[in-house]
Image 1 (cartoon, rainbow, N blue to C red):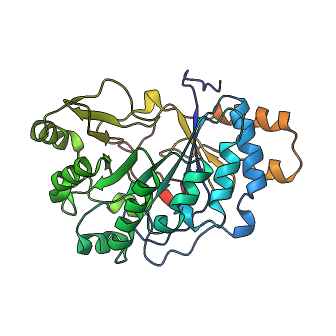
Image 2 (image 1 turned 90 degrees about the vertical axis):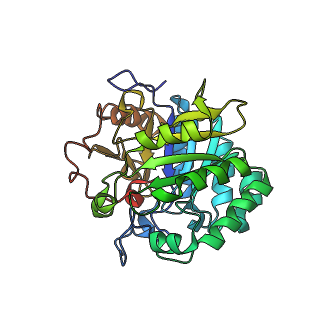
Length: 324
């Protein structure tokens, strides 16, 4: 098992298959941004498969496909099939904005992806257009329902809660997710790049208390997935709402994940600069043993915690460049 110098087991890898996105969410990518990675620098499917096989041999068992928007990467179902077939990989999931999910849901399910997370910050068409830069809500809703029809379970709806933007819709989003059988996850905006710092931060503590009373929620007895959300559930366990609070109540002590960007850069923390470049090793003929040794060295770089509160201007890269 991969263990960092603070005793945390690293069993979860988020793989960015592209840094491009067809939306421009205000907290993620600025309008007009063109500084994307060159395609020749993207890891190929063969390189991804080889590197993830090395991670799996060392105990990483959970893989999430992310972006940018991962469904922009041509051949994604084939990549998912290859990753899911690797010995040791026991959970393969996908984060998406769902604008293209209606086209790809059946193929992704057949390829071995069992569950999905969908970014949806509002149920109001005009509000979503302001947040994403496009009239995106109809496509997103079609994608979500296609995912439901394809049998993904669970479907988690990720809502970045922003003061004065969509905070008045949180109760409606909770009711919608409960009705549809989705899991709502409310997320505090992080100061990733200029766009993240400009997002109107909202402390989820008071929101949690309000939803707990309104929907008669109680703490969930166990975790739902391998991520950082803390969950509340209804009395009969039929509905769950999660809270991801990197700012008001960080979860660094139990962080079990790293992020591999599309260019082969492994980021050890969203809020720190530590990273490790795997593309040169892969393209210079490194052996499997050398890859495994490099992975162990990289994990040793993982910092104890982020400095989002203490140094909000520290990280200049955008979320899409880091990998979800």
